[in-house]
Image 1 (cartoon, helix red, strand yellow):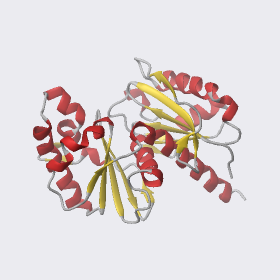
Image 2 (cartoon, one colour):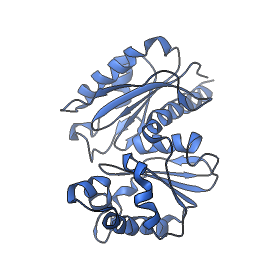
Image 3 (cartoon, rainbow, N blue to C red):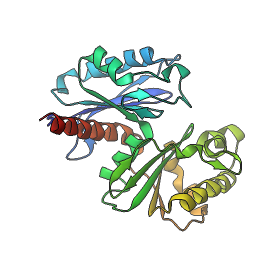
Length: 259
């Protein structure tokens, strides 16, 4: 079992952010550090920045694990996709790379999965025992699925084919910005996406995260769905908090298997 406040690090397209997390409260136990993501964001360059974040919080690490989010599918510590990051990430054994660099236990997870875990434990979906889907609307559309509080990892439902196209290319918030769409115009695209999502999986709750969720009153009321759909509440803290939760959970599970 780990002690102390585990460190969560959220790797994004513009910034790499980290903080130790108090798992009792679901809050940062020290001020968050943010460092710009390298312009050429190869695994090695990103690992350099992650090491800077870890060094900054070295006094609080103890034997707690370090949780790191990556915007891609991560299976058994290996990055499998790179839709919105440098293609050199594909096939990267990122957990091994980071553990060798940091000399510390590291757990690497998909960024939307981490954000979903944060919202499930401490945010908008706290205590919900049904089928919950979190979506993050940003450069792409990230998704996390939970059934009875258990994560189904690497769901990648932002890439659903809706009206013959990859949904995130037309319904992510980046598409709204790129095409200069009004909220009502964008909501029409979100309507098609979320209706397809609920027709496939019949969730009990949909939680909407990503930076644009702060403007949820501009578009969520325009959607006509049978599923309750609500904004995320942890905002940009969700990934860091969820990474810390998942890292602790994985480390504890490994400990049980080795004892």
